Length: 161
Image (cartoon, rainbow, N blue to C red; front, top):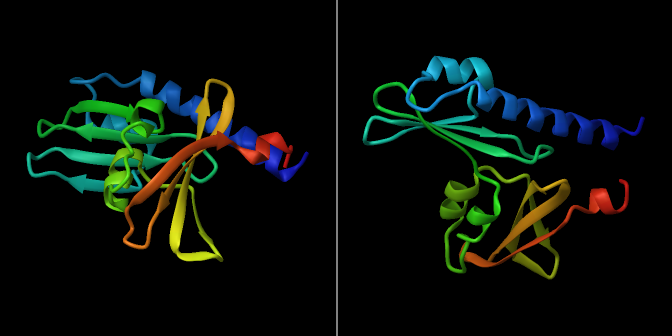
């Protein structure tokens, strides 16, 4: 079996497992320990001024999801969101900073720089649109602000790579 096919299958299984894990958690009832039991250790923890915590569970570069889980000041799950979705892509607007984009979409899968524009960069996130594998790209200018964004088909799917 091709290595890429194995990676793709593993990413799909991870996404399916994440959905099953999320189904076992209930807002206002599940604790941080319950979340960690289902999802494991978060990649990032952000302590907020209101006493809540943001737990980040990115599934990039090969996965198609990025989860943001909020634990309230009371220690209970208050929000579980999959960030890579059209309503979040629509929030990305020209002039936004890289930090603002990361806050909306979570960790990106890949960064590109182009030879003719070395001081600009493109961030990519892999996601699913129904059953279709897609890539959402954000181009940043030399001031690290959004210049443009677009969704395209994942070329790995198109060319069987």
